[in-house]
Image (tube, rainbow, N blue to C red; front, side, top):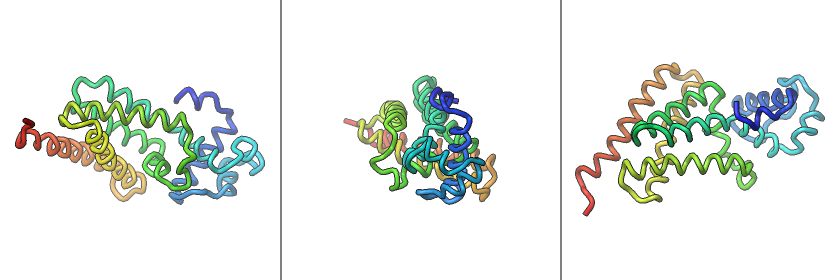
Length: 200
């Protein structure tokens, strides 16, 4: 668990876990505070005392998932090769979302949080994106902008795999195997272009 969530009280943690669950049930924000209070077994007034607005509450939920981003960032920086960095990061991201729920595949893109996302979460996400983009830039031999675009595009694979596995549409093990194969194929197809059309 990350340092930020270690600082939470037990009631805050219960509220955030319940809010995460309620969000995943509906997939949209704002969420029902009555449902959160019921799942966390707390009063709505206690929710408001810890999280005065729904934006505060959902930013708290995102903070619960920072450990997934930290793990991806670590793999991106320390993997022995660029291909391993990208593939292992995608699998770690998928595994984290399967364990904690695919909140990271949904919440950051919801218009409800537009312009109101926690700065610490944004900074961690951007740092991770840049670490992955550096690996992509070296592997694909592209510009920084193209590398970032490729990472944003590749991120859709573990996002969709996690959503399918979490919803029970496809078994998690099959999703993971398919994700790994699809990710490697996507990387191969992106590096193949350089072999056929060398720079210069």
